[in-house]
Image (tube, rainbow, N blue to C red; front, side, top):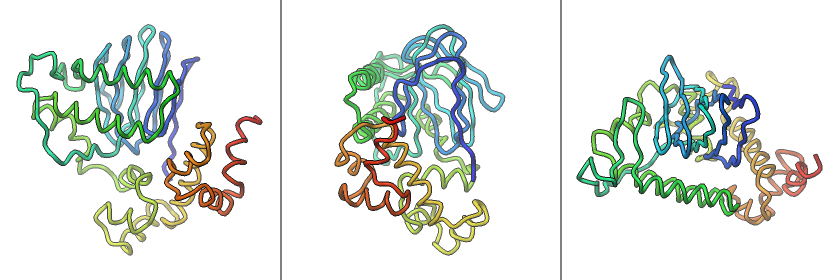
Length: 280
């Protein structure tokens, strides 16, 4: 199995970690390391300036600028002074339909390309990020709400970029060089069954199972259960919400189904898991 880790040097603060999203408050010289290659990272500098390095590439991203880091790439962020960075972890923007675009690339409504890796966000995108930031600091955020904000963000990016710029920006999702392991890791949170995961990768179930076993060293069914359990424990430790809300966000039909699943595969009820962090 691929090992993933996120390491923060010094004492920088993760204000919120909610599945697909991280908000980082970094002091001068702080570094954030990510070795998780299961998704793309959409990076936005809310304030300050950071240096980004990955795969022999090195560049700066400043206040109100965007950058995207593709699959199969570990990276390091280094703060230059005090900075606040907002990260979205994405697997597929899923924007099949066309949208109206801002016709004038010089308009304040436009998101413009500054360099190969950096884009100046339009004020519409800046306003959306400000809204997300306030929601997080007010503790009125949930995974469902973040999904809505994520879709809104992608629609705004597509609407405010020139067509060729958007094709280049979103090309990281279509790379043919993405490994089988990375594709599986990118899809695992969206599919709970072996058949669904195999279909999402365009493979029949039997071929997928053989390839999976050779790559991961275990059956896909056991692997999916193990990772779903890890995700459930992480969610219950990080989100102090009623179990009814937890069941809905973890895609169970009821609180009892969530607790039965936890008892069967984790050995503890959902309530017991949720209380563990309070007792620590």
